[in-house]
Amino acid sequence: MSRNRKPIPGYVKAELKRRQWGLCAKCMFPLGSIYHVHHDVPYSEGGTDNLDNLELVCPNCHMKIHTQRNLENYKSDREKKMVIPPLGF
Ligand SMILES: [Zn+2]
Ligand SMILES: [Zn+2]
Image (cartoon, rainbow, N blue to C red; front, side, top):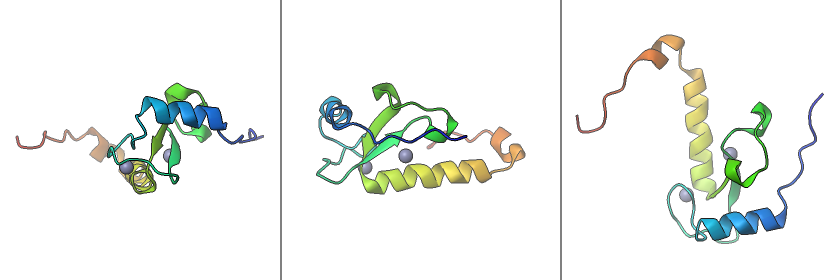
């Protein structure tokens, strides 16, 4: 049985936008009328519609976030254990 996915209420989006100063949470690009609501913990994994689990991102960043996640899921367990040195090291 799957939960019904309710749309995020307008007041929640407005509050998020206020908290983020109207900027994309990832690239700080000013959000216009087109932005996406991203769940930090995916809805399908039990994430909630609480403000703490949501952030507004531009469509570009949203796509990147999910592309990155798919790549991480795709990696083998062996690769996951590899330590990646910090940039510039
Ligand atoms: Zn962005
Ligand atoms: Zn998302």
